[in-house]
Image (cartoon, rainbow over all chains, first blue to last red; front, side):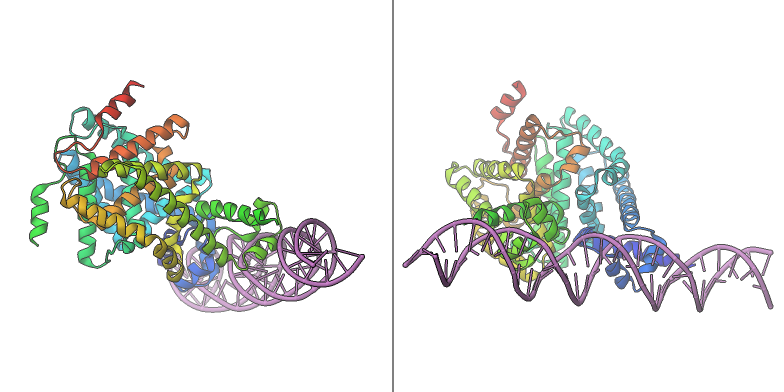
Length: 213
Length: 213
DNA sequence: ACCTTTCTCTACCATTTGGTAGAGAATTGT
DNA sequence: ACAATTCTCTACCAAATGGTAGAGAAAGGT
């Protein structure tokens, strides 16, 4: 059973789609990169659209699992919890830069296709929004529109993860130290953006710890 | 002289490129939308690549002019100045959603092409970074890596402006009231993210003013 | 009036696109 | 051992792609 061919196609297609966009990637390119004939791709996924759908579905599951696990394992403090989610997403996003690029591609799909994906993510998003609302009312997060805050945090994370060009222009390097610095600044940035007024969103001990290194 | 044809092509091409991506838009589509034959497009821009370059160059100039004007007209306070820039960029970005989408597309270009554009934006970015560094040292902005802060703010603004899908999922509406709410939340978000610790980054009077409405 | 330049067009072309038809290996269950 | 199923292939196809060649209309300068 060469089901691994199917998996290899999904992986390669995901990377290419996330990097260049759906329309810009041809079945020939995918097949060439996997090392099979185009018709093998069309055997496993009978149209290109079906391949796109399956890649997206897989991505949605992967992200959901990662995020849910991070939420469960984190403490009750909302800022700590958010930090855990960011770090959990950051790891696979860096290892496979196309992951969040794929999510960003959704806005280019026909409405029916994009809705299938957003529907599968909706429970997670609704939960985040309700949770944020509760925390805001309890004074543990800055008071704001929960929906827009979720969208803004999402935009910041995916934006920074999908645009290495922008980072290079400001003199950032993609080495291991650079990645850690980026992740830490991202966390501090969002902590500050979400912390209740007057409180210090950034974990000062962590900042000092980093400075010492 | 029908130089306006050239301008119409640039505008249509900019919108389509920003919305769908360079590779996904054909010369035929552009020509059809402008209302001319494909060969008219190729008369004004002898290759597709040349068209892409000119669209990008125009975009860079437009953004630079808008940002510079906003910087000059704003007060000295760094958070006010940042707010002015965001509002200045927000207006054209909303009127023409592809504007920032185009900038985001750069990461998909071959290095030589993308460098031509980033080079033309570099002076603006360098200035922003230096200015942020000064303000941070003076305690008027949260102390952090100036380059990464610029990149994070950029990621937040372009991310939110180019992904209406993400906003729709959190229940946002693209009407006039929605646009103002989005802009205001974006400004509050970045104010909070950049304000020095302990200080209140959000203009409380503005918040109250909005709540009253 | 006439020539030149500017501008847009129709008619092609080679290549690439997503997709079909169907043959021939490998693998499987019995 | 044999038949059925699973898997990958070569050989095509119509449509769309970026681009060429060159004709003809419009407009300007003299």
